[in-house]
Amino acid sequence: MIGSGRSELLRTIFGADRATGGEIRFGTNGHSGFKSPREAIAQGLALLPESRKDEGLLLSQTVGDNIVLPHLRDYIASAGVLSRHRQQNLVKNSIGTFGIRCAGGGAGVSSLSGGNQQKVVLAKCLLADPKVLLLDEPTRGVDIGAKRSIYELLFNFVANGGAIVVVSSELEEVIGLSDDVVVMRRGQIAGRFSKGEATEERILAAAFGTA
Image 1 (spheres, rainbow, N blue to C red):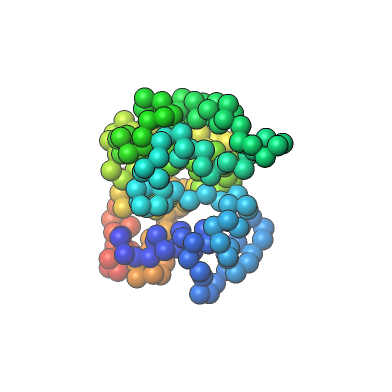
Image 2: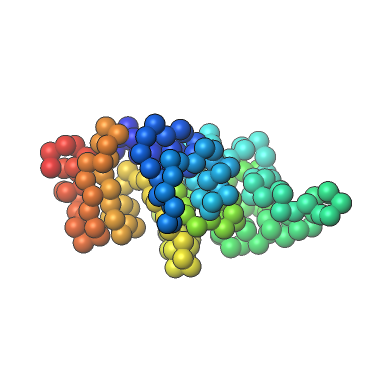
């Protein structure tokens, strides 16, 4: 449920919020947590934030600028000059790969529908080639077609060896996507269910403290 601490948990894993205790275990290594998002990204994590407009996009910029911005360092030529040609190729390929419906890389990202804006944010995340993708409400405010496209991108990511942690208020999405479901309530884990055990009734009972 909103307010249960779920978004704060993702932000803490990603190093955007400081952990006050406990341990994060990533692969075979356990530690007290990442000190910053930069450190988390370097270790193979990516975060799609809860609000794409407030935290995921630069609304005053173009689709291409938003896609390229996190990866500028990869497109610096030997003379220290950005390779515009390589950037344009990246943007063109990303628009096709992620099914972003727009007038091209020069289109303003604010002019896109909610679903296509979300695909731009997802493209930014996946182009970093992460090992673990943290998603906070990945299909909020998108239409059915965009939701289906986003699910396909996520399933392909997992099929290629990636892992995903999803925060969602939609029970159908939680049950349909998850191998394991963890329910939070008041900042604590209130229940955990395997795919076969997860039902709407059990999840709601844990969320409301009536289990």
